Image (cartoon, rainbow, N blue to C red; front, side, top):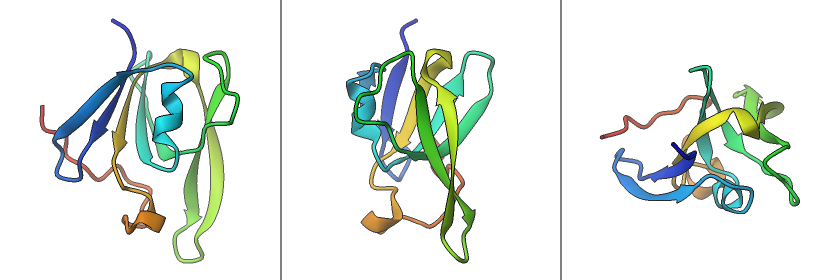
Amino acid sequence: MNPTIRFYKQDGTLKSEESFDSDNIEHTRGMLIKCVLKDGNEVVGYSKPSDYITMLDDLELWLYKDINTLEQESIFVKMKDVVRIDAILYSNPRWSGKITNEFFVNIKE
C-alpha cells in the first residue's frame, strides 16, 4: 500500500487524496495534520515542510507550547516512517481555524 495524503473538510468528509511524496507534502503547509506511522503511532501538528524536502528528510510540525501565549515548539517526523497523512483543510488559525493542538475532525469513512 502506497502512502497517501488525505484532505478532509471540517465536517470530516474526504475532499481529495494524493500520493504522499516530497512534492505533494507542500500542499499540507500550515494545515493541522495527523501523521500515521508504520508502528501505529500518530503524531499531530501543523505542517511546516522545508523548501527542499525529500522522502529521506524529517517533516517539521509545530504545536502550541502554550495556547495562552501562542508560543510554539517544533517536533519532527521521519517521512520514511509515515504511512498516511490526514490533513484538515483551512485548519490554520490564520485562516480562522481553531487555536488547538488537537486533531478535531471526526473522519467519516
